[in-house]
Length: 147
Figure (cartoon, rainbow, N blue to C red):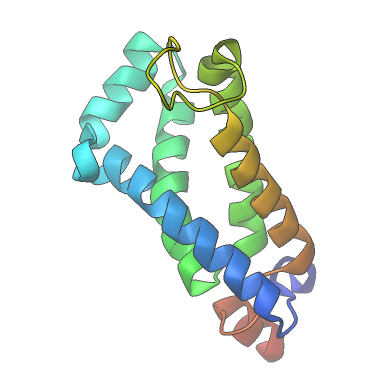
């Protein structure tokens, strides 16, 4: 348990997790709540299972992972677990949807879809969080002190 929660008091962990939490929150809110132009839980489950043919449990875990994981990162709770989850989600998104569109985002509307550069950034930040932990002002740090 100590390995899962351990973190130091660094600014790096704080900056990484807050940045990733803030970036991932709207994506999770789109999928779970329908905010920011998203489909909400039912619509996203339908898209993932019927259009993309993902198993329902995978679709459910992506929605929950992005939604609650982003909030957990902002709190610094279960940072390493959430970072690992985001890596898996992003690798899945790359392989199922974005790899064929190339590296770059579709900035000028000339590609069939979005590339995977965003996903690589998320994976990089999540890998750094796996190494550093949550850092300063985190629930993980409080838990570590109690252990």
